[in-house]
Length: 79
Image (cartoon, rainbow, N blue to C red):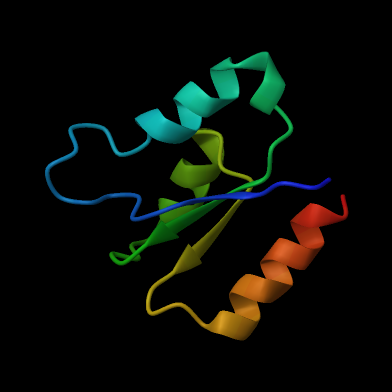
């Protein structure tokens, strides 16, 4: 069985460090290879790199293009 985890709203207001969740997930040996797709509404220059550095496998912005999200999921599910 394949699993994928989408992190909702990286950069949501009210979270001191929005990158804590992917980092915490990666600290668990069971989830080191779990595909994580980061989702953000505030797309700024450098956000993708920050998400990847925090442990996300990939990155997508809102509003979510359903076809793009499904394409990303297919890519990561079969790696």
